[in-house]
Amino acid sequence: MNTSPFRPNPPPANLPIPMVTVRDEPRWEYRRILRNLRHEEAPDEAELDKLGADGWELTGIFSDSPFLYLYFKRAK
Image 1 (cartoon, rainbow, N blue to C red):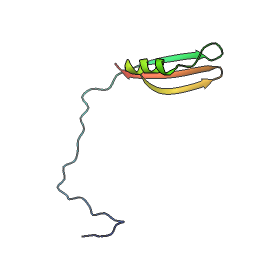
Image 2: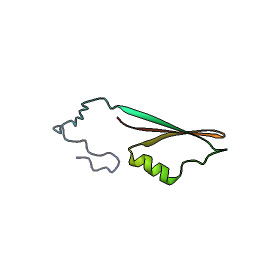
Image 3: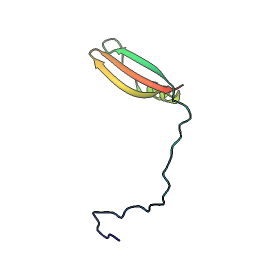
Image 4: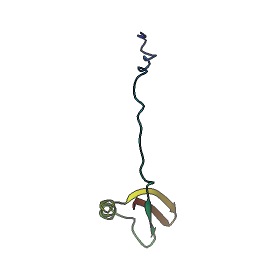
């Protein structure tokens, strides 16, 4: 038996291999919000909270002044 703190003991050989089964490919729908920051405000907490409550998850932000692009996805 190895007692070194730097080299752990190997696991027993009879441990089962964990398996994960995916039944279906996930399907997503996407949404883009575009804001011209010269004429509009960026989304506030209330707007983002509503999107989150509807299942939308923010996945990306891109800024090309004065434009702000927000990308969201949710399971279909």
